[in-house]
Image (tube, rainbow, N blue to C red):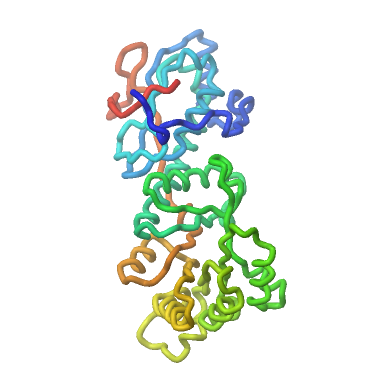
Length: 360
């Protein structure tokens, strides 16, 4: 079957795997290494079908990476038959996403790492798809880098990119490492640290940033530094004019923006809330800055985005951080056939999936 461009898999070399350590079982649960050693000492080389699945409605991530682990780190890879779905495929509970057929001793030492890869990347892809769907096609900035270890950035960023491909929505990432597998670049706004470096003067920091920024960079400025987002947004808009792409609201959940101090009583006033967004939008429009975008960030989840969209809150893009890396999406691998005979544990059996494609 011919494949479209979307169906092409990433080259295994892209992932820069620690091949020798993986081949040695360095990242593998000890019991798999022990099992392989028992079989080798006994001279037994069972021909098995390993079946991989998970138990949620999800969007698959990490499959190209999992295949790369098998391609580069299995022994006698040419004697293994791998069938698999593609990154971004929508998957059902218990659906088989991959089968590996061949001598079990050739890949027993890799189960931990390919399952862990699928679990992490599928979690991220699924979370981002759901946020993009909630945002009704509006751009999302993927911002979890500061909430997790730097070593997860590369694959997580690609998992977010896959989610954007699934939905057809725009997804930006904040570090170059997150964008490295597809050749992108990290994006960002004028941060609080730069404003603080200019003595808390948001307009001055914005001017300096805009003067430095390449012409094709969309300049976006945080406007909550003084907890007066309406006034600051107008000041920045007036100062930067056409060079400004948008303003970002990021008021802490512990604070009430100054523009709302006289309106307390009938709504939750803290953080980035509907009334604050509408006030900023109204002020910008009244001052002739209708073209400027509003980016909302700070504690956004799929539920909060869905609520904003249902209420028609005038947000043009969302910055979403730690909620995109929360949760779990575990995968399981079972030997279900050994030497041509069913051998799965009670309740497990080979589940054929016509969607699987032969790898290689």
